[in-house]
Amino acid sequence: MMLTAMLLAAAAPQVEQVTVPGPQGPLAGTLTLAGGKGPAVVIIPGSGPTDRDGNSPLGITAGSYRMLADALAAKGVSSIRIDKRGMFGSRAAVADANSATMADYAADARAWARLAAKRTGNACAWLVGHSEGGMVALQAAQAADGICGVVLVSSPGRSLGNVMRAQFRANPANAPILDAALGLLDTVEAGRTVDPATLPVPLGQMFPLGVQAYLARAIALDPAKLAATAKVPVAIVQGDADLQVSVADDARRLAAANPKATLTVVPGVNHVLKVVGSDRLANQRSYADSSLPIALGVVDAVVGAVKPGGARGAGSAK
Image (cartoon, rainbow, N blue to C red; front, side, top):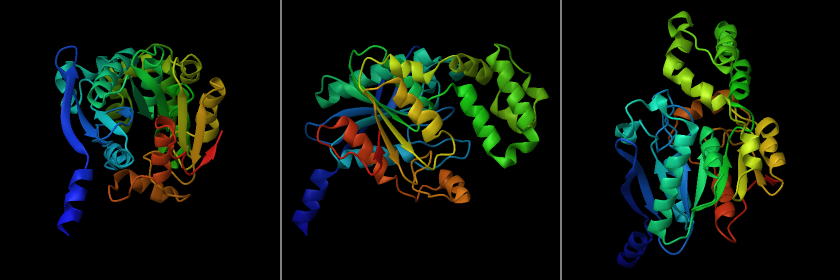
């Protein structure tokens, strides 16, 4: 019994809080060291106020990034999961989180990659971008320095404007605000703003002027073009039960843009990387359910991308 306890303690990953310099204050993250000589990744969060664990005050408490970090460590992959500049532990980095650009986030990702590589004794680190974080990873990958490659997990392959239009249209509950939402996106895409006070209450809260300004900058980027010009290997991991982005419109568009990219489609997995099958209500409920484990197919696909000889994942490949 004592020997077993000692072995378990020895196998437990080392977890510590880490920082890198930001523009006005530190950027904060959590380092999970797997032990041994294995690869390192930086887990880049998705859109809006999403924290390093994959949670958001907008009703997401799935804990997906924390679970991913733990699962990767069990397979010999170290990670740093991060808070974006101006948010959560990185709130002192800038006064206004909405002033950030995709280029700013990419610069931060490169700084985190340097730290991840240094702490694990590697020459470079992988960027694992989830959702909009995939666009950040691709932007950072326009230069190879310090980056081994990128793994795009549930990432858009179309402009964010088109992704958001599809999201609004796909949910029947959005019918009362659909016209206003589509009009807002058209206006922002044209480089103008809409007074939030004139929008239906949910939209006005979701899209204050600062968010509209950030969105206008992000909409101008084409993820597929960034994938085509990436200077490092690209791996794409996509669940086929994702309500935010899709295999056909996003993952395959990214793969087509970069013929050397690998694509793994994981059956029954949704946007927060949980196995939910085809039940839409169960899918939506999973966003606030931290008791659901992360999909092992996603973990294996990430390991297969970053670790030589790693599992390729339970899914179909390109």
